[in-house]
Length: 435
Ligand SMILES: Cc1cc2nc3c(=O)[nH]c(=O)nc-3n(C[C@H](O)[C@H](O)[C@H](O)COP(=O)(O)OP(=O)(O)OC[C@H]3O[C@@H](n4cnc5c(N)ncnc54)[C@H](O)[C@@H]3O)c2cc1C
Image: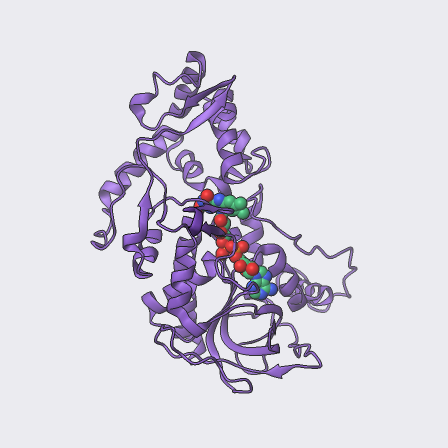
């Protein structure tokens, strides 16, 4: 549906409200003076949330797109979001309370190198197996095809079932979105699901594979069956396609991990958000909690924050929300209160389906999307598409959704998502905001 922008709303200013807009210079150094209270400035892009997604988006805007007029606003007094490295230098150790490692894909390595952390990267031993505790014994998970006949985590009939299923000898897809459990049981059998995938799902998502969406949570594997009629058929097709379209040359600055492994930094994962924060300098505002966002009378948005200095507002041409979905949905909900949704739906139905002079509609109810957590349940991708297109349809150009519930929960996917968001913001600022 294409609806005109809903009526604009004035921001709800607090009694102690001061209006401060911030303009940051393009250079990303830490020496820039903080914005003076009362200054009337603006930012090309405000990134809401200083977790890995938000910080990497700001860094990608600066390094890939030359957009440095950016402000990163973070509610907590420290950057990094979920990343929580605790160091006890006196006792000679550190530990991770949140994420503990990442898959060293090229986008994450690029981010690390661009943040000056190339020498601080540490990689796990690629030959160290992962284990699953099954029937009282820790059993190694196969890490290469040669291990498949010998590993003792699965029975011989279980291995045969998995092999035949992977070749396509299994029930056809049901023609509706499948959960992880449904997809894996159908394609690879019960043993693969119970002994490999279930432990993996609880490790990565802390989630229930009977509810997680295969397409959203493990899209790469899901696409194999789509593309090639079976998991092995899709793998062969993917290899053939890769041969036809070779990858662009790899950035020679990037270290090459030896085999499949995980990575971190010498002093823990917090090194990455801390390094980006110190590069961005005064562009990162800590203890700034976004309380509302409104479309401004002129182009762009007005964001209102609770800060240690009191209530502050910022004018921005574009905004990316990388805060958790349950916070974003509360903050964005006022942008479409329910009567406007009804009006928008009615307006579009009149345009598309029915006589424009039809009598007023009878409103049965209004469905507002529920708060989502990054569990990628069945239907997740449809909900995300609907949320993005609703913002577009309602005229909220330049307001982007980012973060782990959009890009994927793994840190690597958050970084890849940050590069994707930075490209979209850059396109927007180039095509629209400067006209
Ligand atoms: C316990 C745990 C273990 C994990 N282990 C791994 C692992 O080993 N490997 C892996 O790859 N992934 C792991 N993950 C997943 C990964 O850590 C997350 O998906 C990723 O850190 C999310 O980053 P983000 O920036 O999208 O969101 P967040 O880290 O949630 O950042 C969002 C930020 O927004 C801020 N914010 C919230 N409200 C406001 C507001 N109103 N105004 C301004 N700012 C606001 C928050 O304070 C926060 O800093 C783990 C996650 C958890 C929780």
